[in-house]
Length: 614
Image 1 (cartoon, rainbow, N blue to C red):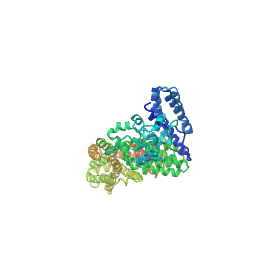
Image 2 (image 1 turned 90 degrees about the vertical axis):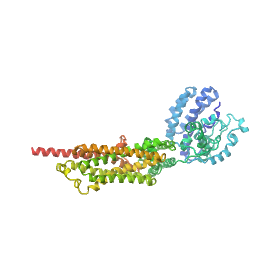
Image 3 (image 1 turned 60 degrees about the vertical axis):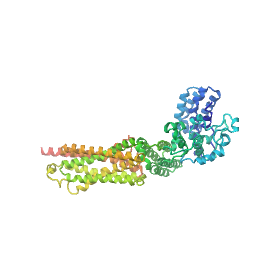
Image 4 (image 1 turned 180 degrees about the vertical axis):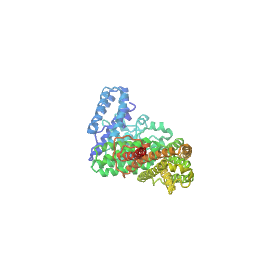
């Protein structure tokens, strides 16, 4: 068959390599099983189409090897045996090639998740090292240039792979080559090389993809190692164009985001080892390091591009940390889910958004982050105008402008200051401070909304309408209301600016206009409302905002380990600061309930006074 070279290079069927470390041996078995299924996924349909007894017999032996490998994994592999045996039934009958290929592909993804497998190198491969490994171990059969045109090749059945053959390379990824180098191909002249280090195997796996490529001219597009390791040449051409293929294979990427995610992955792997050894405290600390020093420095960029994935990552980190703290037997399962999500983030870490995408993302971020603060500031301004105390409007403006200035400074100078625990702590403390100030404002408004004498004198008193010391309070309310959103916005925009600084600049201008229109609208509507209605509506708004910020602030402190975790069965709704944790949700309930209880008590007191008067 024309695809014989692919059959050889993508195959993983050797028995597990001997090793003193049981965990490493198990990891190799996971990789071996994945490799067998990848081979079946690609080549079983070709074997059925050929109707070759030899090829079909080979496929049957491969699925038998897969079933055996799953059995070697013990309890972890038992769950996959029914699906593997169902595939084996069809392969034995040479039936359903498309279904077998599809089911093998699904099993590969399930196995990668279950085994917490890394399908790419931890650092950019050294192609010079790969060339040396190839010359020392591979030229005897594959030739110095990879054409496999050496005399000994004519005596081999099947023949060694020709790395210049488009059919061979069409289905080959560096990950498949990496596994083949480690395990070899039984029944052929291709041996395994168990003495090679992981670094050497990745180096030669990437190197063989350069053999048919011309010299690289220019710089390749930004692509992550995770994607390069699991993408064939035709797939790279389809995405980035033939003109970039040589550079994509010859110039190894070094993406900042992926470095952070790789660091997080290493810490998570360390945590799983410590947890398996019974060191729950060490596992917890390693997971905190993974989050604060791995994910947090790149979270703003990731969140700007894929906020849903960031939410999944944050939840997975907290779930894994909780399992470590409670010495749960599910720690390994939670950790593997986390590893899979980190790798998913790595696959897209090299991509960049264009000017238009960045512009719209910036506008959406400004509207999302600025809505709460804008509504509060507008309500305060409307209230002051209604009270004919517009002299104090400048205090409100000074408050929110100061918060924006601080956010701008953090955007310009705070790339390192806002990393890791510093960012989460600042967000958490700012949110809790805002809660205090918003509650103060709510109580102040509520008191005046229920003082009929004060209400009658408001229009006649401009300077004294707010009372002694209220200027400082108004400034603090406006400042704290805008501070958290200003900090978050600065962090998000830092990530987007890496893709398109001009897109961020124009997006900020458009978002600022939209927020200004919102302020003017609320200010005018608020001025037309009756005084008592305005006070009550503003009170409700401030309390609701305080409840939201309380949940978000406590959650931020949980993420840095300053507040313990106490999960409960509850949904997550981040816009309202609702999280499935008792230490965030129940304080919100208490805070929300206090105004309702006070209202009930006040109404009962009014009813009692009316009854006594009658």
